[in-house]
Length: 141
Image (tube, rainbow, N blue to C red; front, side, top):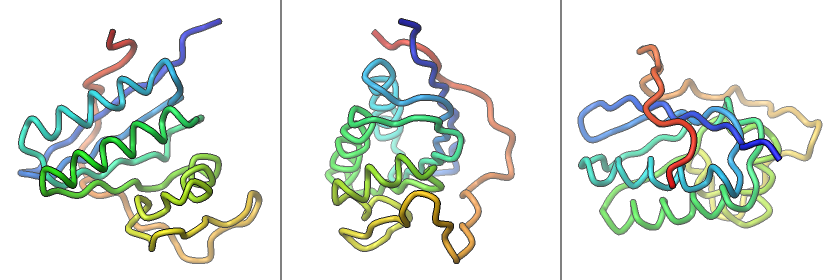
């Protein structure tokens, strides 16, 4: 079985960071997500925006990593928000009652069913004016 591929890009601006995840988030790569988000907190970042647009797959391991990061960020006095999730990860978050992590949507919000398109345009990713360079990729073991 091939290793899943995930690349993490990070752009900081004072106490705020944009983390862009590209690839698959699964049992093999979820620790990379967790470590990346924990590093933000260790570095004094208190507002973490996670761009999921380039994510091609996310299972419950990814969901767990996001929930853990959200809890740790809240404990540190910060906020974590997920932006631009493709439909499958958005559905997982919505069905698990975690839609509150998505762009600040109210708790319990479900994204549109598969095949439906949202009527409101998506907001632009925060800090997206700077080109991204990978900071982490591969296995963190």
